[in-house]
Length: 262
Image 1: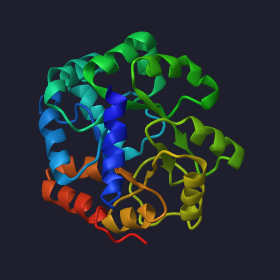
Image 2 (image 1 turned 120 degrees about the vertical axis):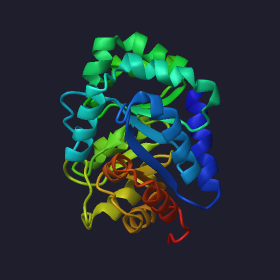
Image 3 (image 1 turned 90 degrees about the vertical axis):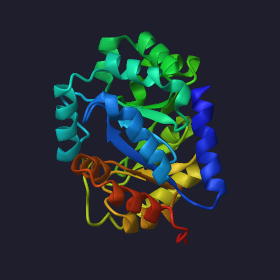
């Protein structure tokens, strides 16, 4: 089961005393024909899993870097159909857990039941849907569970404690802790209350808590990781991939994984 592959990868990483590092990349940015090669590279560089963005015309949670990557991917003809076909083609050779990040509209257009089934067939371990509120998640949660796909929930800095507790109690795989107030994108600093917020979330759930949004260097990753189980890095990875700066990606992942946590 794909969700068990994700759970094992997360558990095994934490058992080493290191933190989890999940890079985000945009599916189809540079073409789907290089996706397998890029996933192999990220795994060799030290990624625990990969968050794979599905390009969408109206990405409300994404900053300019990821929006631009999505536009490049759409121009390359990337769609859910072509992405699933690509992932299924090298499913048996893949050991790095894949998590899809997509908005609800593409899922609805594809068909929710068909989407869940295609995720299982393509070996997708988890799903993140940033624009689907908790009150509406019954539209997909049951079907994802039937097809052994983890439904990863997002927690926001601005949410009251009661809501955070409920989100944390229902998340699967890990809890995605949004560490900024706003959209994705690199930032030089984070709000002072972020560490307290991350530590609080750790008390609310038994699954790993990963901090995402705004992480742009290894120092920030280590700082945020000291209060939780690891980080998700998107815009910086997307930008470095687009520029072909693979050595810098390795340095970022390996630097974030150094055992320098308190």
